[in-house]
Image: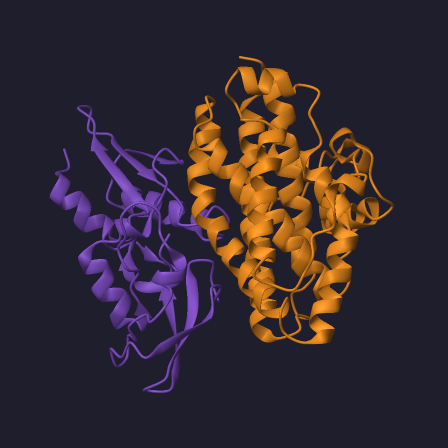
Length: 160
Length: 251
């Protein structure tokens, strides 16, 4: 039977198709992993945004790597646990930043967007002298900002 | 469980989102500035995605597959309010509609997070996070343009006067209103409308725009029971153009 550690290692290879440095586990899109007594692995996934067009592809990818490793599995997508950007792991946050995306700030309770989207630290130069340009970006999960110090547009992975 | 009441509730919400999502997508490529082009396109994607999830819930209640439900009905079978089917017009109208509808939609999902019907409460929690961005976007532009230049203010005022009677149609009472409230599915359209009036007034108070007096306005009703303007069927024809070419194609 596959161990949890091995399983996590295998799943680490499945990245967000639009952010190839960050795995679905680190994003919190895979939010529950159970290994049944029979050895069947049960994985629960939830989309970052309801209209995410990459969701089905991500599910196929998870199923594909598990099949490749000969692991019997059941992969389910649901809303039982609504995704929140607070689920992104510390490693995920570092990797978002290294990809040039400002990581989502953590929040407690309901996010106060007017505060959270304000003065977002620039992922390139760490300056907070930045402005929100658009709460929408090239994908549903990103907002667009401008850094007044290094004078570049950058994107933030949205707090949700 | 009262499945007929529940289905009626979910159908109208899903249809609102699908139709407004389609209208928003018409801004793709022609937004007044690139960032607005992106914003309306993103909101379109969110709304169509949310609609799909609601059609999925309807499917679990015995209705056809989401694609069938979305793409094979004609106008009289749609339950959306008439506000969302109106053509995009000029940017001022689209912005005002976006503000009026999304403010109501955000409050609706907030109320639905405590729905006694668990699948609805689950998606409500999900959509709430997404709709917050739509409301923020609407509010930002309404407050800025609603107190900017003479032209921006008068354009928004005219759009508001035109859209408001249609917006009141969002809250058209359901034939199942009593069951919906009694079963705890949803707190009801009347309560939602009260919260909505309060919210839009508080935003408009930050601008020079004046909300038309509700007492002298006749709400435009009928959308919820399949009565639509002449604009819906052409929208559906366009939306289903590709499906109609090859109805059984596998994607």
